[in-house]
Image 1: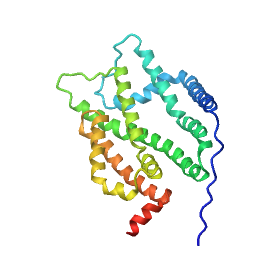
Image 2: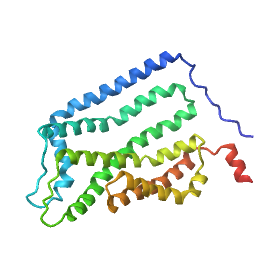
Image 3: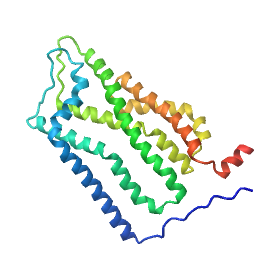
Image 4: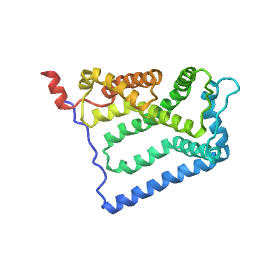
Length: 256
């Protein structure tokens, strides 16, 4: 007869004020980390924005440029992007601070599954952003510019462009977290891999609805977001089977 796995208890409970102080300290460390990276990147703000604008500039007709319609836009747009980029760079550090805050209340078995999830969530977020920049942006901008009526010069405002691409970055970064969300749902007992597979048609429809809501109104970007969500859902189901041991009630249900 196999021995039951030993489950180490979490650390003793602490007063609420102690948790609040710890949370405050972790938030301060996150802000300091983001601010430090931001200050290091600030001298290269214009170069970073130029790299961000490259997918659009490469698709514009010869002689066309981007424009700034507000007085402060040439300064504020690169400044704002540098701040957001600093947050993107420090995502692993931010997640580590969150992990350090909740870790004392977790069992050892729970800690073993949380660490891979934290690492994979950072990598998947970066992968989603890279997919948006290298795959989605060229296709979307090429399509949108090609649909401009005859005689219309396409010259995008730098602030409007920044808002547009940041929305897509966050949309694709969040969408690529689907495997992590799937594993967490199974781990928390909200659902099981078999139930998720049974609901696959609804998941596919939901992926296209999310693609419609989070991307511009063109079929290319919507499809390029919906299809990865579906494939990542399938990957999440496989990962959940491998990482989360089946519960006793699930085994009983299969036996029946």
